[in-house]
Image (cartoon, rainbow, N blue to C red):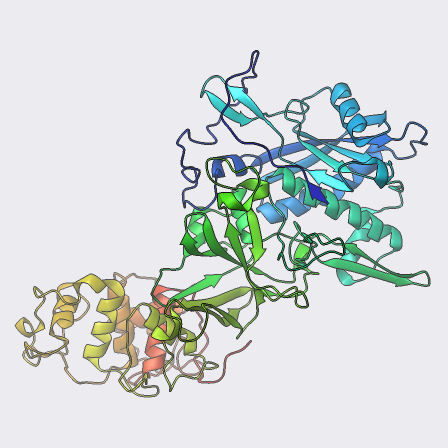
Amino acid sequence: MVVLAGLVMAVLPAPAGALSLTDRVVLQSVDPDPYVADPLGLVAHYGLTSSRGNGPDRFEVWVCDGVHGSLDLAPENVTGLLNAELPPFFSWLSEGRYTVSFVPGGSVRANSQEGCLDSVGNRSTGGNHAAIVVSTLHIADASGGWSQGGPGSFCWDDVVSYWLWCEFFPENERWVWMGWFTNVGVRWSPVALSSIESGVGSLDDLHALDLISTVAHEIGHTLSWPHSFTGVTIRDDGTVDEYDDPMDLMSRGPTATYQDNRGTVSRRSLAGTHALNRYAAGWIQSNQVEFYPWDYLSLHAISPVGSPGTQMVVMEWSTGLFESMGVRVQKSYDSLIPKEGVEIYLIDQSASECDNPWEDACWGSQRRTKPSLSEEDDPVLHVLGLDEGVYWGDSETDPNRHELNVIERYGDTFIIEIGPGDNYPTFTDVPNDSFFYVPVRWAQSWEITTGIGEGRFGIQSGLKREEMITFLCRSYAADECTRTQYDGSAYFTDVPGDHWANTTIGWAFENGITSGVGNGLFGMGQTLTREQTMAFLHRAEGAPDTGTLGKDHYDDVPDNADAWYQTPIGWSYDQGISGGTADATFGFRSTPSREETILFMCRTLDPAICPPSKEPVTPTTRKR
């Protein structure tokens, strides 16, 4: 599979009789900055790369046979197969944003690839967005190789006075070329293809799957997607193998295998593509992308295609050069990928990475996309599972070293942490397989806690009231925690003016989070109870009323409906912040541990990192 040669992207004088598109959309600013159209500044010429992938995209299907061929391949058969298999695939991959369909074009005869394409272009009546040409020519007669695809060409728009994608074929020259297919028969049943995911299929099914996955790959090129490859796999002829990534539709992709008395046959299977391609097509929204903040510990929850949350995390080295991280799981069309986990790709759009940069950037199908970790004998080294990690830097003592670790998995969501080397070591008393490891690391990342000293967090100990108030201030108003206008000693007689928590206690009083324990006392030095913890969190969240009371859920919560703790406890249950200490038991008047309190805070403030639960917390190792 060979992508068409990259287009020389330059703003040229308007040609005589230039087309003016019917539905004009400003796809790319005239600003010379190639990243200006991307709201996140990541993808060069984002306006162009995202324009093809949103809305309907209709391909006309043609068959080209040799002059002396039998023309036993009907475009209607190919069209039926593609319409049965590819629209649901691209709907899944684009989350409904891209609608692809296929219509029969016709049949032509020619002795070469060029002759086929010229004949199709001359006979096409137009009105479709691209053409697929399936040829029975021998590969030696096809100058472009076995299959090709490209995004097409440009037309001048008189309204905005620059070049946009030409909308319709044949003007846009948007082709998919499929060379040397001779046996596309009616026996290739769409129903049989579904069995491939279970590892069961006929030889005919595998040939059909090969056609379908190859067309999908080439459609990816018409959407301006590049190959992804390591650059370390060398063919026998000394050239770089651009098809050594088994995770990506735009590389080798996964394979399906069938074995019978004729032997074993393997064919490419349908599979998704990595997060950056989906973002460049406009399928991942900007609010589903998170950036690693340099020089800080950062936790991110990443989910696969179809999830409403974050689907891509970016570690940006410089403009146009970054690591892209997404999640793949062995479900749906990704069922045959060789590994689940967080896949990491290096995206390089530097002008030196391609033959025809435009405005000093490689873009679209020329964008260099490389698995960040690569060894020829381990094609999925760039995919990290639970408890696996990687670092950037020459050694453990490199001051620029940055580490990424996969620290948890909840269903199909993976939690990663990224940090600058050893600047954020884990607490020595927090095991990495404990239920509280993630919330404690989350608290470290937001600098909510630095522990109790000597590298310890202080597990199994209780939390003082002033410590909790300080945690809350750092969580909700970090820039106000040291402001001198907050003076807790002005409101409570047991708060010294020079106490380290004086400011945060004053902040909490003025924001309605605490009024003390009565008689002008804050309760300095008192250990926090579970109901007090929920009350503090509830007030910090604006005291929402979810409609239930603590006594509605727990047998050990007193029946007094007017008590100050009833609504906070009911709210904490309804929101999945606390499930109590046992079935129907809240743990009223008991002392939560420091790690439990941090878990409650994490569930309240960052439910993607700490998913809410109504189950009691039990201090056991996490479920994987």
